[in-house]
Every structure is written in structure tokens, then in C-alpha cells.
Length: 339
Image (cartoon, rainbow, N blue to C red; front, side, top):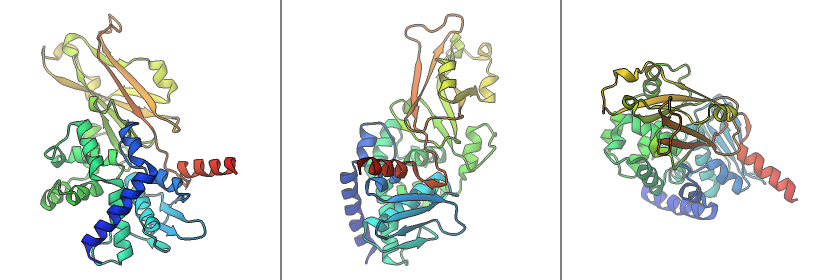
């Protein structure tokens, strides 16, 4: 089967899955930024089990009750993409499959090409790219910036590499441009965001800013969250948690990055535009629903005043640990309750 035929066939099936699962409603109505393959699998009665494995990335089991196995010792983006690949086997009517890779290329068996292409159609539809770019104010030129591409990949829930190739698949960027982007390592981007402090390069670094106020982002609890806001320190304003107690109750700690901590309002040129970065760290957070973080910019000696700037954003943490996914557990509980 030709690559074009595979692309057309898998796109049609992916569109049917979108319609039946109502996956885009979560993005368009609730403010999320990605298609969740775990939720789609649970809706189909397909349990997803995460466990560390030496060689396999994932497997699909076409048993009396189909199931998916995913290597939990990989990055969140690769885990999501692997699950989508295995869902490709399920929705395309394939038999059981074991995958040491999910990037097979044009010389692989048709079933693997179909699963790979379906995975991209499922997690990175062009309509989703358009929604994210509109919310963030990104355009085609923006996406040639590796820092922007990295943040795009986090919002899509896929790897930096997969996000880059997705832009080629949708004719947003050229092959040569993407080859250049792939020379930049995500680790160097993360280190830059944390001002050189990157204790664990396997964790992601999310950059929240004012364009994220209408979105619900889905980091892992152990990821690093950097909040970047427009600062008016020259006028005596400082960004602070609206309620330190509330932030603590929600399981967060909030601290300025070293460069922000050393900021002296008296040294800022009057009228100059600048930003201030905070690191928002999650301790023991509730992963069952979105957590709201509110910051406000005020003059410390005056307290909060009407008209002072504020920032509200939400994070719905996704725990990725060994065992059944959160969504599979919920589906099984509902099945027991309904029986």
C-alpha cells in the first residue's frame, strides 16, 4: 500500500475516533491542549498498563479483552506517542504486535506504517496545532525557534522530535528547517529556562506566561514549572502569590529564579519592559482535577488594589507511574460500579 493511501486511510479512522470519543471537546471547551490517548483507550475498554521494559517501547494484545502495554521508563512524550501507536493497531484492526520502535519508515510492514501514521493523526491533528498557536500567538516563524518548539511539544504531549516531524507532515516547516531544529537538544533548552540549574534532565520544564491563562496544562508532578510575567518593578510593583497559604495548601512552593531574586527595583530603568521568572514546584498535589495558581502584581506597602494585574493558570498533573493508568483505573471502577 502506498504511503498516501495509508495516510488517507488512517486519517479517516482517526477522524472517526475524534468524533466518537469527543476528544477535541476537551481542548475546545475545557481549555486543555492535547489529545489524551489514555482517555481514548479507556473509553474503548482497552486497559493501558505501564511498566519498565528493557527493549520494548510498547505492545498491543488482541485478546478477548484487548490491552496495551507501554514502557514507563521513557519520557512522557514518548509514552503518549507509544500508546497512540498501539491504539493504531487496535483501531486499524491489527492483530497483536510488539514494538521496539514506533518510527518504522516506509519500508516497514504495512500494519506498522498504519499504526505510526495513525498515532500522528491522533495526537497532532492540524486543527489542534492551530488552536495552540492561536492561544499562544505563535506563527510559522515562531515555530522555527527551538524554545517555542519545545513548549509546543509539551502542550501536545509528545516529544520534541515528534513535534518537529509533525510540522513537516503538515507542511508547516520544511525538512531542512527541522533538521536544524533537531540539532538543538531539549536538555539545553531546559537548562536555559532554569538559569543553568537542571538537577534532572529527564524532567520537563514548562514555561507558563500570560498567554496560558485560558489553558489547562498537564505536566507531571515532578516536572519544573517556570512562570514568566511582565514586570513593573520600576514603579514599585512585585509579583507575589495572591495567597501564600493557598499555594501551600495546594501542594506548591513558589520561589523566584536566582536572576529574579537578585532583582533590585531601584536599578530598573523607569519605563523599561522586563519580565520576572518564578519556579513553581509541586510537592504532593491532587492529580484528579486542575489545580489553580493565582499571582498578583502589587506594591508591597499598599497591598492589593483594584486594577492591579493578576495571573491565573491551571495545571492538571498527570502521574505516570508503573501500573494501570489513572484513566484505566477509573474505567474499571465504573465498570464494577455499573455491574
